[in-house]
Length: 120
Image 1: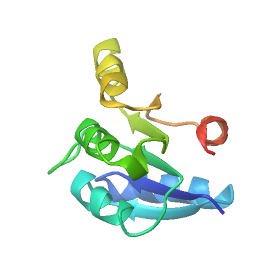
Image 2 (image 1 turned 120 degrees about the vertical axis):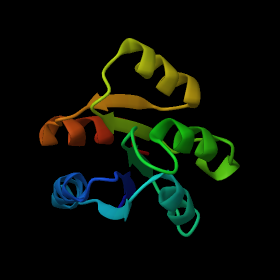
Image 3 (image 1 turned 180 degrees about the horizontal axis):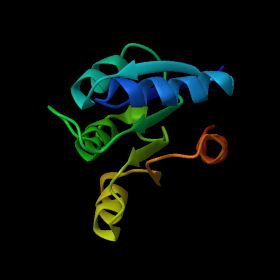
């Protein structure tokens, strides 16, 4: 069962995302921000990171850059799920190493479709 690390500072968004992913057969690890996510990512193998952008302590792009610095995360897909939709932010996401960019509110079916395309 693939493991997905979901990162969002909103408890309700974490619950909605987890509910969607668990329903589609994924194991979910929840993190409250980028610092929490980075710590949890090192505790067990993960198959995909799904992160919000705007969070305290360490935002989604900061987390993406930090993960990409480590060899074990070089090939792990990182999807940014955020309210940010500007082309500038998307370019910054790509530059940081994000695999894809999804805008909230999310469509559960579309989210699963994108995950299935990028997960190994």
